[in-house]
Amino acid sequence: MNNLSLIISKIEEFAPPGLAEEWDNSGWQVYLGNNQIKKVMLALSPTIDVIESAVKEGCELLITHHPLLFSGIKTISAENYANLPLIKAMQSNLQVYCAHTNLDSTQGGIADVLAKMLGLNKVCPIEGTDETGLGRKGELCQPENLAGFIRKLKQILNTGQLKLINPGNIEKVRTIGLLPGSGGSFIPSLKGIDLYVTGDVKYHEALMVNDFAVIDAGHFETEKIILPVLKDLLSEFNAEILIAREKLPWEIITCE
Image 1 (cartoon, rainbow, N blue to C red):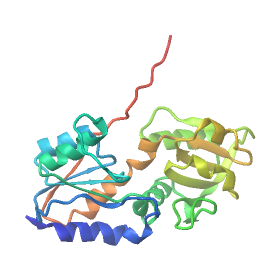
Image 2 (cartoon, rainbow, N blue to C red):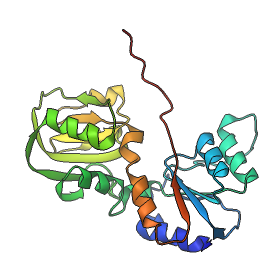
Image 3 (tube, rainbow, N blue to C red):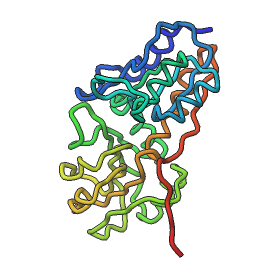
Image 4 (tube, helix red, strand yellow):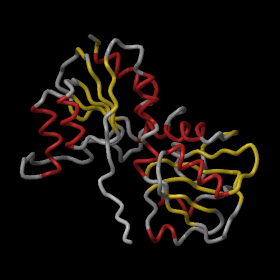
């Protein structure tokens, strides 16, 4: 069995809480004082399905990227669907910890992992995202056809669909900006890139794209890549580390 504080210290050493945005709620979501951990589940989001899966697997700790709680709760009610994950976790003696924007910003975090998977060089914080460095930019060894880059990205993220916003009809790319998760709001302030890869680009944000192309590869798809990294990070502990089976909250319907 493992001391809980050692596991959390390992996570916080990798993604220091001080890197989290002011509006964020990284850290403990549910702490019940149970310090001996035999099973840990890793997930992007603490949904009711993930909570129930962790409980079924006998986990004492769930570590997620997205917080379970964002703002103060005045009432906890089983009639409020949003409260069900919290209620289930507490009823089942499951502790929940999250590393959110600190995991985005940290060296070796989600954007750095994606940059490495794409083979980018000269990786550095991208200007125009945030003072704490949520995003990254880097260079391909040589310019690549955008179509070929898209095929590579779809393979890396194991996704069959993405959105391309390319009003300038850019055909070749070399300098790539990355912000896994929700990064559409930063589009107006970005410069010095050929392509920006992110998720959750809204309609009016897409209309602002001008000097570079944008790929909306999905919030879930661009962030799930960090879970195997966290599993490796915790491999030194004598605990079973599981990765939750998560799915998108929607399905794509095609009409024939």
